Amino acid sequence: MLALKTELEVAQELAARVRTARLQLGWSQDELARRAGLRPATYRLFEQSGRIALLRLLRVLSVLGRLPDVDQVCALSDAPRSLDELLVPERQRGRRTKRA
Image (tube, rainbow, N blue to C red):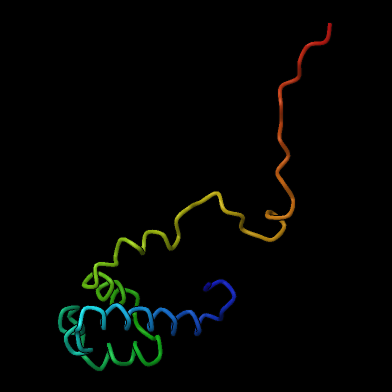
């Protein structure tokens, strides 16, 4: 889970996941860089450090067929945004019935 990691740790984990996807396709770093329109040194730096510009990362994800996954990054959901939301249930409002 990425939620308990620093930004640098998340970037490095993302780079490792991209590396795994690249290796599953049997591509070298140079091959992926060429397909994404990047300099090989730029791609190698990404795999080593996790550092890459957003648009370049999107190109890499695109050639790996993973660009649709990016849509989930900031998707709105009903998931709790804080521990308080998780622990305190929302108050349910109901209709009052007329008393006779």
